[in-house]
Amino acid sequence: MDIVLATFNAKYIHASFGLRYLHANLGDLRPRATIVELDTGMAPIDAVELLLAHQPRIIGLGVYVWNATLTLAVVELLKALRPDLPVVIGGPEVSHEVDAQPLCALADVVVVGEGDLVFAEICRKLLAGEAVEHVVRAGLPDLAALKLPYDLYTDEDLAQRVVYVEASRGCPFLCAFCLSALDKGVRRFDEDAFLAALGALHDRGLRNFKFVDRTFNLSIASCKRILGFFLDRLDPALFVHFELIPDRLPAELKALIAAFPPGTLQFEIGIQTFDADVAGRIDRRHEPTHIEANLTWLREHTGVHLHTDLIVGLPGESVAGFGVGFDRLFALGPQEIQVGILKRLRGAPIAKLTEAWGMVYSPAPPYEVLQTGAIAFAEMQAMKRFARFWGALANTGHYRHTLPLLLAGGSPFARFFALSEALGARFGRSHAIASSRLVEALYEHGAAEGIALPTLGRALIADLLNTGRLPLPDLLRPYATEEERLIRKARPAPREGHARQEAHGTRA
Image (cartoon, rainbow, N blue to C red):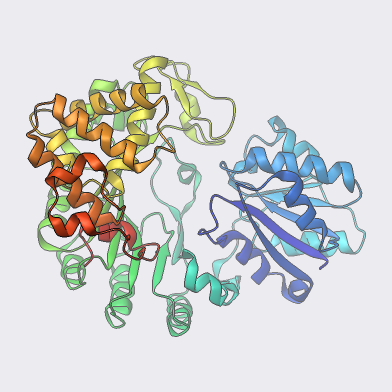
């Protein structure tokens, strides 16, 4: 192939949306191009072998915060082996601070901004032997001029991977930590063409749709039409993910949302902080009382699976302040609270707050905050452990019977912080811990906290049966029925997109 489009996805399950847009809009060059999707577990030299096996005349690489270091290693190898081979890079990670990045210096062409249309122009020039500027600044493409990429999802993609779709691009808000703060408003795709593309995907068997729109419910009319599209196609396998503005749920939208069966919809709702001063500092504009009312309504009147977000390390917010917000959100009962660590993404306006608020960030991707004027380095490390253990124990739904016992009797934040520190001290890490050892640690921690052992044992057994991580450890066998002691096999794993919903009980 003359043109190889490639990127390192975080996992195989994530199909690259950006590469498919580039490929779809190559025009007459489309038959001369191919997509090569790699993942971050691959060694750079193996990736280079795969890329060069296509004997390309141009390699285009998508660069993101999670793959920037790996991509740099690949480009270094490519330039050592084939210095004559043009390498074109683009993506959010190389669209800002270009002069400061060794990767940008190595690449032949750096595309800044949305390269859907300009990439084809660059390829035509390179294939014709014409000169191309080192940095090509792409203007915002006319969405009406873009060819939609959905036909490039393969049958394997539809069956095994997360398939991304978008009805709009851009964001009207100015949150300092987010690159969307640089957007020039919201642009929408032609709705008829978009819904026709969704219909084609559905006809091919797709049932797991993930919308990447930053503010799906900004346009209530558009939101209603898209929800209506899925209501007309309900079946037990359907699962649709949206990112919503948390304080914008008018009655007409609520009526549609309530019509969906439990577990069909997942809403990602960014709270980030409940502290008004911190929110104002980062230009995060929302109304906490409306958020609380809407989350309460969603929990009480719908079967929506709620994935909510909070950020540790925002300028001026202490660990104690974060804990207050965490407890406030926990009380609203979302199935998931994603505890994120602040990152200084290249180009994001958060950089302007660095000096005034004592922000120190890692110089390497993903540029996580190391300490702030309000959170010392050791405290930040503890909060990173908190975030990882919360993700593994709470957000997965694996311990939905046991965690309420461990968190009862005080601040849920304080109780889980103590648990995460105990686990960190016990294992010396917060990942790759065997299930049996984790169950033993939770049992011993709960016993030390005074939880009745039969109650604790039954809760852990219920969680192991719920998630299929069997057989039961010996320490739980005294609390198991004879039938439970005989169970040896795990149940079949649910499809991606349904696993957490089933573990949390939001999907039968």
